[in-house]
Length: 295
Figure 1 (cartoon, one colour):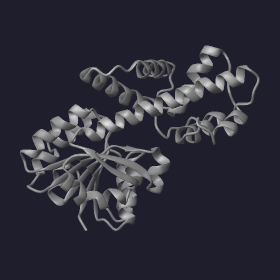
Figure 2: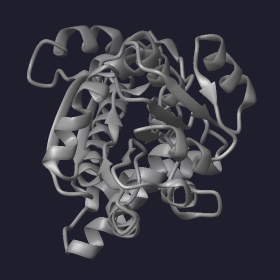
Figure 3: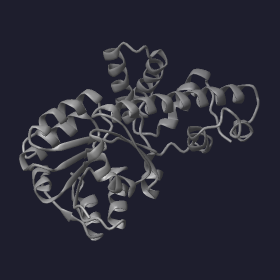
Figure 4: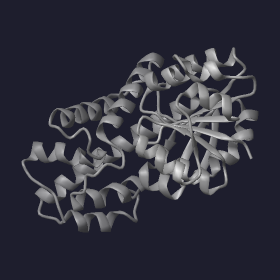
């Protein structure tokens, strides 16, 4: 089995790395959160102080980081992967970043003999924990096949979607659909509530019909329980929709609904809710309607 480096032990990265250990992979991990590193060490992982050190020790490096600048720093910066790279090293970035950034990083790494895949994920913390996230992968098909088994140890679905950058384009499409779904559920629940119909009853009535979706089943119960503990935070969704808007502008693809929901999320950020789950989009509508939805 390939030896794997894992950089980024946050909400998603920590359970994903645990699933690799469960599958029998030897891990070398790194994160600013030393408690997370110690937890992985207690499960049998090694630790390293820099990405360079990890690159020198492993066959495959996985990153799960917040945004494009973080990935660029880890991959190309001082003591970065590129300084410890050798011919044949595979870099799998599972962060959600701008497609253009993935292509820029790949261009520099390939000159050092490093093969890169951009492989962002969807599913949130619960699916990261139970190993059923969806992974959308861009990059060389042969390299994809070489690491597919590693990705499958963390996921329920692993799909190759094109060249480097295509993974993150697919993730942006996913994030647009998720955001618009949550906004639609919020708007519908406010309508039901203001009209005197129990939103819980509305949810149960429509979930088996055409309006039913994974998003509805994941987020409606949270809204109705007023549980806004983050599975996926507002501030991270702002990052993704900002990348979506920039990419849409780059390719001349109109995105008026995405722009509207992005502004809603910015409003929630200004109101102090940026660290809450994106289901707190409901609060934006509650503020407009001067009401509060619950069971």
